[in-house]
Image 1 (tube, rainbow, N blue to C red):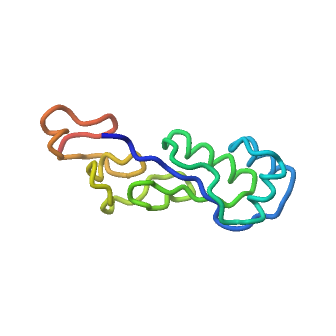
Image 2: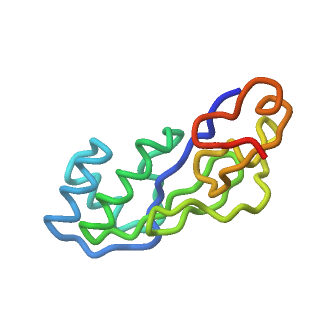
Image 3: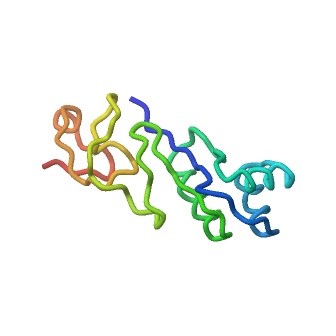
Length: 127
């Protein structure tokens, strides 16, 4: 069972500026010219299929620079809140793991078969 992957997307066009261009370049590795093109487009995927541990800090750095971005779970397609808090405990659309196993979820208790038979995954407790 793989962990869900996340996508960092631009939430809308952002005005160009040295700080914004450098932030996009630092996070994505794009050239300054391509970073400017992405900012002008407004609806570009900056990072795709990356772990939560990389997506959340990248989005935080871009937001600090003034770039409007969203982080979306690749499994359930829910958008994480801008403050970096976990998403609500609503149902995850993944058919591969229980909702509580999604790293972006706010659940702390899991009663799935795996957690009951072996032990809860890190960050979770048994009911």
